[in-house]
Image (cartoon, rainbow, N blue to C red; front, top):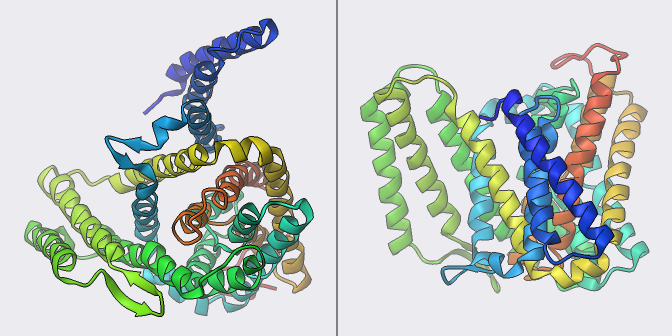
Length: 438
């Protein structure tokens, strides 16, 4: 943990690197500029991490550091010890989605019956505004087919966990945000391939069922496994506090994972030339076992009761997303140099339109202020990690993955700014979780 007093040393490191970069640019000596930029972003990220008021921006700065590293040393993000790093994207997304699942419970899904109208409004806006705006921008900017498909893909993705964080920072309705994210994610195996087939299909071939099965494998199965892990971690009663129970769960998970790996067919379900692969089930079972083992050691043997998963999973997710973006950037370095500014402009427009239409259309149907703010954030922010993985696995295109890689960091920046602004602006109506939302 970086303390605020210790973080000032990273501020000094950032200032030194910044001065060195300016001198190099002014004198024309740019041979070592790349490493300086990498260290500059790393120091800035560590400085932000140690300052509570700036901590929400640390992740985005880390993304810049990884992007800089992949631009300067692309070969370093191609293979490690003979392993193609492109093959790690799907397992990393599965781990990240498992982490998302551990933050959810069945109550987050049942809550839709307590607040159906705002959830319905947010759902409709999520899967209408953002795909259509993405398609419009892809046409307007005249992107190449692969990159245009990536812009539509990020618009067709469900909400991400970052929207829940930004809603909390904005003083919004966090339960509503979590429920909306949960519902849009559960619907993504149908809604995302549908919009990709209808809209992105005008740019590149899209196999509806291949994308549907990939989303189930990468997103839904790990989230369900995470829900099981949530029960293990936070379940009430003595059942999940006993060493014998946790040992049994860990052993059963490992045995089932081995059994599925050795004896189950590679394609669990096949439809035409698309199939549901078994690796998501294996990863989910192993992660459930890992959680049970960790709780056995930390909670039962060491008798430490703090929520260690709440500290571990954000770090794992942040590292995984940074690595995914670096791998994608390394493979599309030349394309990024050509279309980077245009993609950044498209990301800003797409994100801003999502916030504006999410808020004002929610106001139009007479939702209260806190619900409007929550829906605006939820509609404006998508699951960039999922879109990146689909671009690489289903579209098989690093170029298509560029848009999610750029849109994702910008969403965190804009979301943090919007959340801070709304936090300082008093609400004009009182929030209600279970009552009238009008």
